Image 1: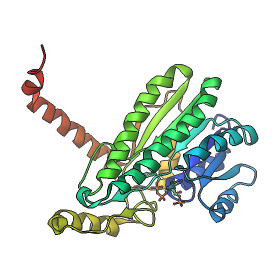
Image 2: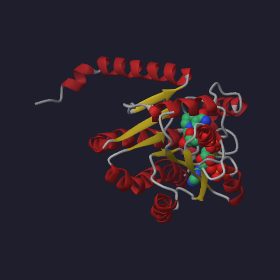
Image 3: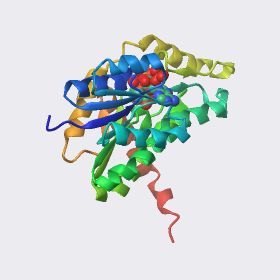
Length: 277
Ligand code: NAP
């Protein structure tokens, strides 16, 4: 490790956030971690006395975010790295899933990340340095039936992240969208919000997908500790990328998607060309 940094990670109670916090602490970094309960805060702070700082925050409590960041900057120190990790999966067929489920999904996965970013940026911009990691998903590139709101939120965060990177590059601030494949976290377990089934027409398409995801929960290919190590390599990089995939499943599926997209663009090229002039 070059030198010790202060990371602010949202959602350190389990999964990627917890693994990244533990690995960062092991490397000698300081970690401010957001959690949503007193017990989770105690458990997090016990990971590293004097170097693990828990803060109670739901990322959809938009009014509270600026105050939390200001307090962290003043009392803990300058935030070098913001990791927008907090998020969850909303699973459900679009026609069956109320708009309210979509709003909640975007509030957490998109608006929460943007609100955190907007609160941290003035400090990073003043210092002319910083790194923001947005944990998106391979679901920000590829899609499958039954997770429209989740994929929509991750596509949105991928796009927002890429734009932001272009806006703040001149200030020495890097922005990386980190898109994991399937990892052994609580994502498909306790954290997932599943819309109840109501339209039999979708049974044949969707039931096997829901069953397979439930069966696979806990057995996924990816190791969150290895993801954390990869993120620490990214944070240490002199020239981090705008996008990083994690996992061989993400690599294969995203490459297939990009090839299929290129082929579709080629196939319809004449029609696309026909509208100029
Ligand atoms: P996880 O183990 O369920 O962890 C999710 C974390 O986010 C928990 O700490 C949770 O806190 C927190 N969180 C959820 N909603 C929040 C809110 N409104 N405000 C503050 N914190 C909130 O799952 P994970 O896989 O590590 O998820 C982390 C990120 O990785 C998510 O953005 C997810 O979409 C993304 N991701 C996961 C996978 C995968 O296969 N695991 C793949 C691609 C992307 P509580 O304990 O309080 O609920």
